[in-house]
Length: 400
Image (spheres, rainbow, N blue to C red):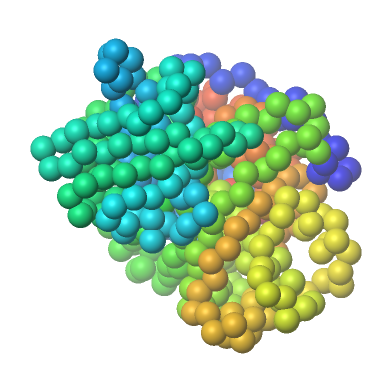
């Protein structure tokens, strides 16, 4: 079956509200860990994850950092309008977050019908932030933001924005969320949702991994709100997969090549999507080294690219590096819209570390691509044994 024909109704399960973790555990690495390998399930905690990973493995982490993407404006009438920043509009993250006067963002707007015209304002001791509605897009809005004080927009967000907890965490943001909804290695501002598989890692866990000669790689994929986008179409052909920006250095790609015959393990669905996208971007570069730009759309890895003669993973990554050097680039910065669903053949990743995902989600399709129909056995076990689900919940180590 082509993934376009998949019915999302085949990927549903009953998730009671009480199974959804509303708060993180006091200790990150105390979260429970379900291990699935060769058809067998066992369990432990993240503090002992090193015991289940082969020596000389390479773990690939997403070092994106969650921004305070929710900004609340109060109208003179007392009504509140929430602007949820999705991504910079026709600009990159670096220039937008370092801008000192104005910037434009693609946004969701809560209470948009109440915002007829004119600017909204939010005043602090040091500056005034104003928002102007510029354009209505099919699925969002374009908002222009302006401020005084000659400070970078990243600082504006730090002081005026709120951490964007997922919609299924039905409570107000508290002080602990500022630290706990970030990984300890978060480095590059840009996400509006955390790469939650990494929330369980601590300095102690990293020390134990290093003692076993398990190394680390860091990629950057800025997680968009599309990660929570429900699949409403009857089949996947009617669902548009969200596109996300990836940022990967040549050194990272070279490290993957050196470890291609070892176990390369993705920490999170975003890292997995990035790794597999690197392979297909390399295939494109190998087929046509003169391409002016590289990106991955939703279906091409099942259609036109899949029809090409199979290129070994190392060769594809070498072609990608050659393309970058030919274009005088030290890193890859592009968009991927790859949809990993049952029928997908993994090219680089040998396992994934990931939390438990929502029913009828593209993330659950990705899990099923990795473990087949055994996803039901895994999720039934987690539900029956009181694992905590979703962003602040427990997680799993799944060997592909």
